[in-house]
Length: 469
Image (spheres, rainbow, N blue to C red):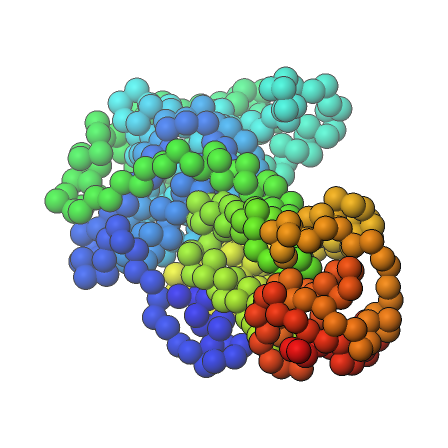
């Protein structure tokens, strides 16, 4: 598990083996293991999560072939591009089976695989990119901007075609209609028209030596495709959408807010020195964050565990060994590493330490979360303690409502020599009622139970030191 590697790298020197997917094991013969990922809806961000999960499971299982079972009208460019990038990371054979249609973004993704097969009557192409508004309407944009937009996507699909051995001119014509498609001296599609191919047209051979225009052949179904590619009888693992990918898209959109709310909740709980609804809400926000990263195919549960270890170390620093520093530093490091690595797209067999480009988005999200958390904590620290609501909340958290609100406003130095009652367990820090004012106090190392009589023996700045009477 990568998180264990991080722990060892930072503090403990622990080395752990890579996790194995429960779907298939490395004991299965690699050449007889095929993963099939359905692309049966519009291309959207949740589809990225499904494809990423499938590719990583296939890599862990050492699968020989990954097949996209495609029937799509296209979709969003911001989802298409990461899918193409994810497919490029798979080390085995990649195939697209166009069982009905692969329009627009679907055609781009198909070209990102090493081979394309099509069912009888299937079509592929019409990949001109269109700028869309959130309402689904097409905005009126200058022709120059549309040409620039089209040129960028045309270059993306040409690069994929060249990498996988397709005719770049053919796929370019699916995007850009500004020139003729001329092959073997024959104009297959004139200027001004976008290329869309049927299965018969796509498998026609041209050139010397002859080569299919785009498709490696026509097959009626997945079984025939496996037979054609020498995989008949192979173990087929089908990756199915779980239905929570759409939820994960929403969760990941608000990931910085979830992190900020979690940090705010932890701050409030430490300030109140208790654990109640605020703590439950904070933990819920953080678990929701890790859940979103897990469904997105980015994080395993190991980073959530690493995060909890970090929080536990901070608790030790605050309540058990105040001033110890080591546990607090390690806890902070573990938390930061867990949050960052939960957002990094890492693949089996990849480097332990991610490349700088892979950290860009995680750092942006963490930065936004930090700024938002500091803003909310500053507001809480400045305003809440001055309100009666805050005083009542603090009192209820520490004494279950047994003590009334304080009626005096003594300074820490005024407490010296006075006696009071511990209203929370002093471990060694906690709260005590000195006279009729609630105060943050600390012992000299002893643990003092709640409701014990205490006396202030030392005041160092704002640090009020008590001992049991």
